[in-house]
Length: 405
Image 1 (tube, rainbow, N blue to C red):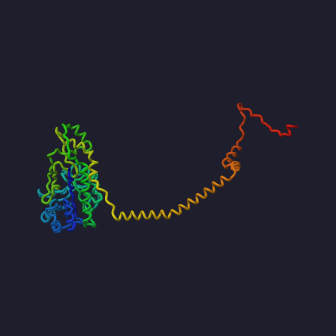
Image 2 (image 1 turned 180 degrees about the horizontal axis):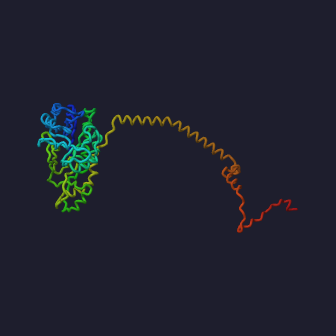
């Protein structure tokens, strides 16, 4: 059974001890302290006080944008972050220690002039504004490197964003606040739960199963046919693994350093990737071919059982049933009276029709017959033509007196 790895989750903009303790209780991967101009900006001394309980447990990130060299020196000297986060264009002009892990920030727009790093944070145009970033551009970038998605995320849309973008991790700031700059413990818990639920669903839909049948030699054409749905997304053979080049310093977890165990899904919920060059004896090919057939089984495994009805729900159903019964009792006399009245009128009409003589009913022509008779009488007689038959002789009836005389 393949266990679903937790996605990388960063809660940015720490300003209160409650926010730090809640993030630690939720076991997030990193917390951010903003040193740029923002409502969440803190001094280095305040950041040191807030980050003290989290040292050695979760990564402490110094968040900057277009920082000066003096600010960088102050942050490194006083705060001593595990990771430095700044825009990708700022890194070239900063003299940073080689042992310091750096998280570059990319935003929608023209690509940066420098080489694309192995892992970036994809942010909206303005950090901390709550504006949703371009998820389509983020999804395209996620195919090229590992990205941490940020910008406009909240507990309601983080699951949909992870399914669409398939990022390495997520970052949130204003989406878990009760007021500008004040984090809500309840919103942090909901965000973390929603992100991990989305990652579990994605990993379960891609699980390979425990049984792998042996497969013969595979050619490139057979391999392309099996992986036509998602080319390049291939599980590595048993016994191999991938290790990222970046390290996160003290206090960071294995997910920060980019290490993936062999045979397990990566942080994006996908199996580790391999090239299309496949030699003979790859036993994992048949398991890859059955991936689609196991999607429905994976969804059934994570479907929660139906919740039992609560006392409030049962009380509402009882009130509804009583109201419907009272309405039926009130309408019953009205419906009965209407039926009696209709029956009496029907009997009266039938009695009048049956007692009226049949000759009188036939003698009185209907209005439709009267209209047809008047129409036929108004028509002119047909003109005799050359082929018209001769009119039959008129027969006159003579009275009995005329015949005897």
